[in-house]
Amino acid sequence: MKISEGVEWAAHCCLLLDWMGVDAPVSTARLAAGYGLPPAYLNKQLQPLVKAGILTSTAGKKGGFRLAKGLKDITLMDVLTAIEGPAEAFQCAEIRQHGVWGDEPASAFRAPCAIDTAMRGAELEWRRALAAQSLAAIQQNAELQAPNLRTQVQEWYREPRP
Amino acid sequence: MKISEGVEWAAHCCLLLDWMGVDAPVSTARLAAGYGLPPAYLNKQLQPLVKAGILTSTAGKKGGFRLAKGLKDITLMDVLTAIEGPAEAFQCAEIRQHGVWGDEPASAFRAPCAIDTAMRGAELEWRRALAAQSLAAIQQNAELQAPNLRTQVQEWYREPRP
DNA sequence: GGTGGAATACTCGGATAACATTTGTCCGAGTTTTCGAGG
DNA sequence: CCTCGAAAACTCGGACAAATGTTATCCGAGTATTCCACC
Image (cartoon, rainbow over all chains, first blue to last red; front, top):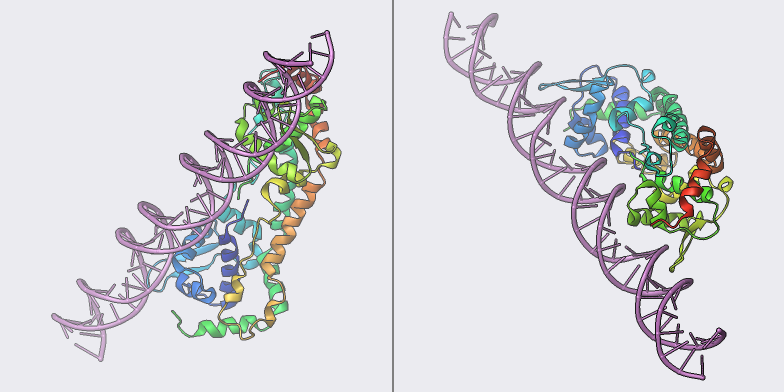
């Protein structure tokens, strides 16, 4: 039960793209250079974000990624489901249906598994909390801790790095 | 990001042990027979529950597992942390600390990562919901759907099966 | 000098390996039963 | 018949493989640039 680190990478890159404030696409090489990440793997991790409509990608020499919408319209839930997939963490295998004491064949199993219900409910709380957190709010918190971070990022990305 | 199926097995076994209502230990062979599970692997999955103080195990010919406490004192959170471990699902790798634009060496990183904070908060909601669900409540829900399940289980386990 | 076009440099995208975690199996240490010999 | 003891049967517990998922890398398809021959 471990969340892929790609979620962290993707969220940071979204914040970074907004901080840079440029309209031109930014290549994975430049994004990866900022955090010291392997460029090819970062590219692989950002691809599902394109399919989820969070980023847009353009090929070619001046290509790269750019935000498809504002940070206020992107939640942590969006980023997570884009990378981890829509499946729930707890997948009930319905082992109770293999219980050998049930005399009813299948009618008793229309009611959902009580354990599954409880698990789903808890997981729903988690997803609800994730959906309530927009990247804009997170960015705001980050800037509260480091007020001059935006200008520093822009300074660094002004000159053509890698 | 997938929860081990051992969680489902363990929770079902706890309910089953209570339904059986016997004070004598129950072997993994008998528990596994009820659900058609591989006995050796079920044994492996139940071991962390012993270390967590949810079950007690006794070796020997008449050995097996029994509940260490009442179902009302066992929560889904207990079962999950016993099997999955205490680590959080989202583990922040702090890639921001490798950001090359920071001029401050380490002082700026005493403040926690905003993404990590949001993730931890959401995960806390999940764990809180899990901790609020006792196995007793889940068992009650299960009995609501199948009122005669307890007696059926006791009937089946009365005679010496595998 | 201006224009058209081919070569080029650089991008994403998916196919391909290395590694880790989960899943599954097996055998040994230990305890209770059981069986039998002796009193 | 009762007692004692050794052997056996059965248990958990952890060590040992197979399978699945995650992490990392590489090369091909495609596009904007760039450079140069030609008008």
